[in-house]
Length: 195
Image 1 (cartoon, one colour):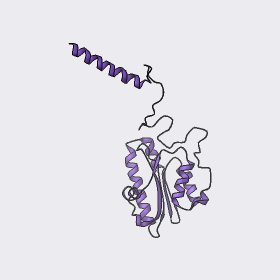
Image 2: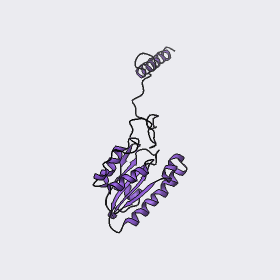
Image 3: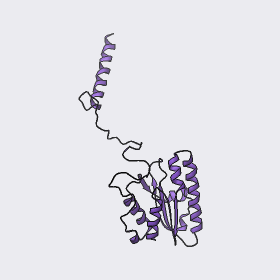
Image 4: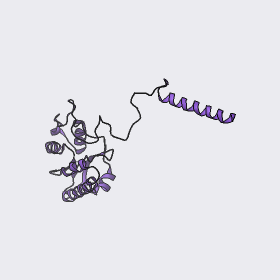
């Protein structure tokens, strides 16, 4: 019997120490926000790229300077800089271009793109300088990507499906832009100014 009460006392002390360390040591629950990262989108940073209602946002990419862009990577960097309401994104790599888009890299002189870090938004961008004679094949691959996105989002998140249906696809000479974003029309105009 004595062994059980000692074990219960040790367990109670361990629980008390655990609660004290979680509550800041004062025996009450902390009201401070946790600093542990969360995979769920926060209320202050929407998972979509809908325009922010904050007055300091620049949803129109109005800083200009697209006329001075020399390559598609610089264009993508400027887009990411100008539109502060975009979701967290990562840069494309050869695997995404080949596997996800189905584009043979030998058809491109250069490319750049942004892809969402989390699969809760359909927002993505792809721009490329296409080698002569390959534009039709590249555009077909992009259209296949659109069909894949439509199939994915049609049953997953309806608002993202609507975003996909309003995608932008622009050709300017040897350059092509594909964009899924609430800013697709503005980005298309910026692309035309750049190339």
